[in-house]
Image (tube, one colour):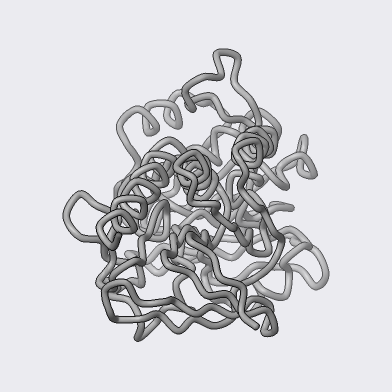
Length: 312
């Protein structure tokens, strides 16, 4: 027999937990399945200084525990598990069927999707081979292991700039490889990079090969304008080139843009199917901040509450 619930939240993180807080307070008795990474991407961030309410800052894991505790205080049923199949109704007031871990069946009146996004990699065989041996997509997770060493950061956006400045406080030298002749990062982040003495930015430069058998010993970089190749001796390579939304489960079910982000209607969190809502990085490729994810989580719960109210 399938378990019947009013509100199912798929995925944790600021969006999921905030949706849970609002849904629980609205007596929707939400059930959350956290996914494999409980707390989402923020659990890989050591310092969070820009989330309101933490005057002295906090770390991502602690903040997610705070949000989880708050959601549970109001009655959210937080469960560790992975949604593996969905069968969403196309009818107004229809029941949405979900399978968790390929065995547990859930029937929900509303579903809030907050599955987040996953870091992108370059796709080089050597990159995958040396994952865990010096190649990483999270400076705040792994930077500590490269204290006093030389590292490379690949990318040109805010994430790359942020990771480079973070690493500059730990590492002897940070070399940023930027594929184009300019950075996409905000002016504030560019200024921070430019003012940091031990960060060097190489423009029009890409990684051709990550060097080393079992651990990173360097990179072979190529200037995509001149074709000139350079070997840079480093022990760590941090990839910061963006994210892929975790929406594969909803392909051919929900409307997405060309890169896989779920499309929501207007200023709401409504998807193209009634009773299905999306919040956080799964539908936001512009801001991707904890506070904006939390905001859309709030919106999703309110949208779900109003949807249920309209059916009564």
